[in-house]
Length: 103
Image 1 (tube, rainbow, N blue to C red):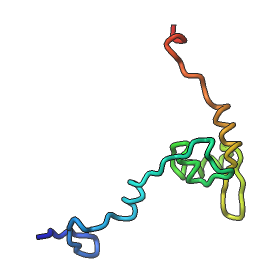
Image 2 (tube, helix red, strand yellow; image 1 turned 30 degrees about the vertical axis):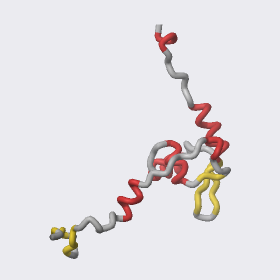
Image 3 (cartoon, rainbow, N blue to C red; image 1 turned 90 degrees about the vertical axis):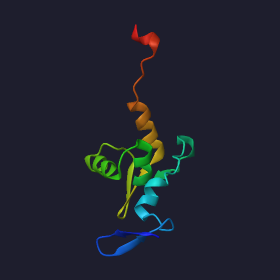
């Protein structure tokens, strides 16, 4: 016999056939990030956030502050030139320490 689960508005039967919420499905369906060679010419804010491993909000904040290069505004849409972004990331990269460098 299925148990009843209380929602804020309704009582929902809790069974194994209940579909997960859309938010849960989005969170669990992580798409593999494309390699830099496979990136499209123009990236969306979501793609930049995935590439930088940060949130959309952080990307919008950095765009507003002018710290992400290659931003193109088309009407209300923000696109980022992938080649400029990748070059900027390569410039910002620091050399990692190896065991030989630590001594």
